[in-house]
Image (cartoon, rainbow, N blue to C red):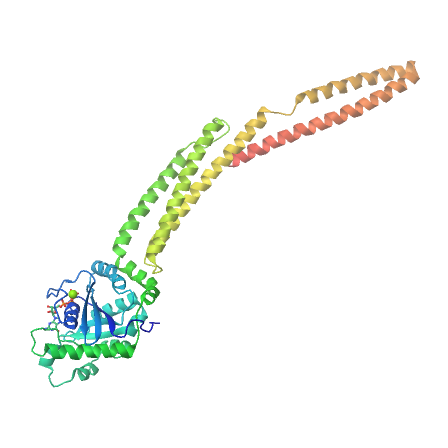
Length: 421
Ligand SMILES: Nc1nc2c(ncn2[C@@H]2O[C@H](COP(=O)(O)OP(=O)(O)OP(=O)(O)O)[C@@H](O)[C@H]2O)c(=O)[nH]1
Ligand SMILES: [Mg+2]
């Protein structure tokens, strides 16, 4: 909500806004009672930047700000909308009135209404609390409608104008900006007094906080009027990004898949992997940065959704690149494990030794058989010793055989894994 004025009661900050050529600068000059702002009769915008000039009116100080007019082309509108926020720094205390300038002798068309809607979106709903409509060319009105009071003429209007009038709490002033006109001073005094009356009745101040509240809507406007430029910018950026991703993908697919037969030395592989990881991470960062910019420029309007969709596809491309890279990395790791295992089989000495020992126990068996016939008590002793040996050797052979089996199984498992990657 607009705040109550905090300035001295006799100081009023007034800003003139509206479509180009409607008479903002002329109205400002009338209020100032001097030609401070440049006026023009051409149809292209005359005022290029926001300007402030002041005047004493009775015991009141009037700070008047002129602004560039809103024109029909989006590009120009964007320029004007970029300039308008400067009014906030010209009057940091805020504004007592936004004078929305119209011409009474020009039909209030859709185009005029569009200007009002832009201003409302740009400054936010608090704009209406301090908005006063100024109809220019009062001198001509007085000539052509001398019998009809202006209020009566206003109330008889149809179409969009009564809606606007209502939005602004029925605050409208007729201005005669022709300095040559005989009644210029009388008309000026009447108009400015009425304006001050409206300001006092409204008793509101549009401040920075009110302006800040409309930031999101302003962003939407900026996107709308800057759309062609934004589209061109992201068209280029996304194409460049896509090119880089495609190039990385081409390299990835064209590169020989690692296999047991062509396993290069590990340090060389490590170097390659690191390089690729850097590329992928770089692409990922760039894509994230671009998406953040799109989101920011889109400002919640959805006008850049096409680019968001394309970014989704690019992220998918990057993640498939990343997957393939991880796969390659894993395969290399398995190949390295396999190669290492192949070079280091379990000790075969144990197995051979156990086999010899087993042969020894066979010989002992034969000796026992002989002794059983010749010297039975000795045979019993040898038999006990041989029995212990058989048991020990059998368990040693069993242990080594399991080791060999496990080794072979691990080799096979690794080989299968390598083949499946
Ligand atoms: N007769 C007459 N002419 C007016 C009146 N108000 C404005 N004009 C004329 O309308 C033309 C445009 O007025 P400006 O004040 O330059 O309009 P503007 O809104 O400031 O235009 P931009 O700066 O381009 O946005 C000028 O030739 C003025 O002399 C008026 O009350 N009576
Ligand atoms: Mg002007």
